[in-house]
Length: 519
Image 1: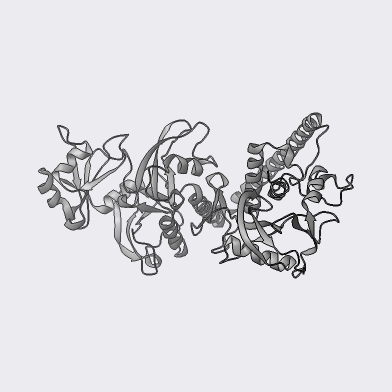
Image 2: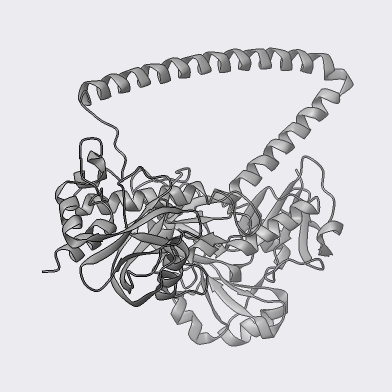
């Protein structure tokens, strides 16, 4: 099987991007090499492999210990690595691609290769679009790959010293100088072999004071292509699997089209498909039976435990939660509401996926990250500065049910400006002396209620301008106190109070109570 190794350029891919390539018939000796645009790279057969080589300069290496239960195929792997490496990386982990070393195991130490996520994704997509799909992605140099000291560069000006000193030191990149040997930990006696590219070999020998063995870029590329590493993991792994399946399908097609084997191949294919169909049908039947059994067992257990359970409206069941539980419920509800409406990217409409334990969502195509949206809203108690308060009833509320006035903050508004606008729009009153009181998370769907009180003239006439409010009245302090003593909206059917007020789950009740009993 022939191998085409493509050196990924460090610059972002564009229409004029050219790739250095190495073509080998056996994976060991280069038969052809050069530079070409993606569309003009050597064509390879269906049985050949295209390998992308990530330059040593594009990768950093981190050593981590995987938690128990988290391995290469764990759905939590990406989030776990972001958490483990967040404090060690200069860039935002969401913008980086991670790849585990081959053979990594849960609970064990492992190397993680790190590179720019968008850069690698764009490079692979550009090659895919040009008809050169990549089967594997390998690092130019990986930890423990060689005992030698390498001097890399196409000219003396960009020469670098590279080494893999040991299992715990990853890949070291340093300027080409004698002092760098001490920093690598490879200044032992005898010293390790020195291997250099032809363009910088003389410079390496002069700087380090010993002879160097020559190794071309193409020889090193083929050596890297034979490594067990594959950086196409996690969100980049699916494309690799798809390409592998496509290749397998092409090979199968070639065999089926061979005249001398056609009958035998079709017979074997029919038998195989029948066997697989039977297995899949049996497995599906078993899964359905197990699922039904599990559901019955779960329902039985729940029924035994929850004989007296009731389904509650969160607005009406707030008294059943302590402060911590209420905070957790509000947070969970707001996050779930946000996730329901953030499943597609606002940039390009691509499906997003939850990351960072649900605290953000990422578009895997563009790398754009979105965070939970919070909509600020004001809520205001309007009073006359003495003994009366203005309360209002929405069109969807039953008679006797009144509360404070509230509304969402618009772009360019301060909270105080929003208070004045909302009250003027909803009941036609002009307010003054707007004062902040407090705030409350309100997860219906994902708001932050900011509480105020303001003064208004009772002699002004009410006017309902936006259709949201159908009734507003001035109530005395005594009327409000009586309504508070009578309970809240939840006992509307049994209460004969002329005024029904919100329950304790809402900041509205706390504001009303503080006005009714200022002492």
